[in-house]
Image 1 (cartoon, rainbow, N blue to C red):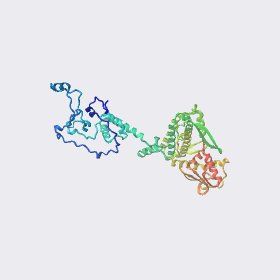
Image 2 (cartoon, rainbow, N blue to C red):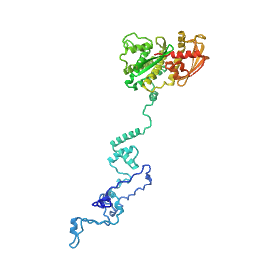
Image 3 (tube, helix red, strand yellow):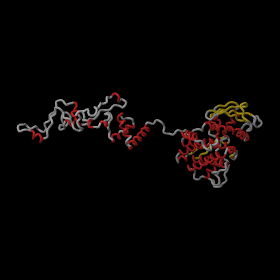
Image 4 (tube, helix red, strand yellow):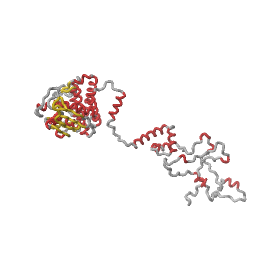
Length: 494
């Protein structure tokens, strides 16, 4: 190794012809292409033979460098009196020419005029362009490299496919939003679909709450795993001035909903899931919701699993389809609950309320987010409970659990009333007749006022909170307030 860092036996022309490692390139944003002077090529034929660029790969002879003849030629040209030049004698110039360090370029004169391209555009191989795809997808290439890659993508299908995949991957790397689905996505999709193509046979307005709540509960059930169907669920309601609880499983709750839905199914002339061909196998089926549920639970051995979801969902679809095809007169058809009866439109609203309440019970058991119904549907549920309160008050009075009648009036006449003010989601104002179910509530004869949140009032009606803790604001006749709050809790059942 010589002192200048080069091997002693390497010639200068080999060093000058070798490719040099380029220095670090600046950022793409710092490159000012307009400020870079572009080379001007002479027109074709302007170069004289003496000025022609030598062919690629043939180095020019340097001035001051003596060409070394081959051994045979030197022996022939040397005269008898001449001294032979040693084979390893090479003349080295005192100062190396700066032009010698430049790499030898292609023969531009030999290239046809129409094929001469811009000197700033790199000519890259397929392998190099393929290696640049990752940097191109990240927008990390220079302007020249970007142009070369994009031009290559129009000609190479495999690289184009790879570039699309890389761009998609970059999009995932830069996402800032949550991967969870928007809870309102299903509603927006359905609204968009129905807006473009209305249903031929629309669902009656009074059945939309039942359709929405069964769909929400079914979405929850589809998201839970097999083991969570056996998660313990605590059902609670009020009986005889006290709270009652019952433990079951998620599958048991769905079986309970299906058993009570059978009352509506029987009223429409459809098959009862607990009937002759159902779970009980022909045994007598009671009408009371609580007894029907106990009958179903006793008949399912081993306990129900997620297999109960499909028959329950099929029954809900059948009920909605039947009421949609039956016409408007079906809304007043009576549905018997054993101790009481409801019109079909109120019975489906009651079933929607129970789907929401038990859906919340299941969601708490499996740690699943579950929201209240829409404001319009919640308002209808509150209205149904408010319309049932005068009859519930009369029943408690007959049982000795409520205060005596203070002022009897003729049926349809305004009587003593309680102003039920429900605030927030689905709220409104209702006037509850206190002395007779046939009387009409009136703001002019209000003797008390109770203020409640909409969701809290529904929890009171479902038996999930105590009547003593329910009211946020109370004013007026204390006995009337207590009677209405406990009558609201008495509406709850299994």
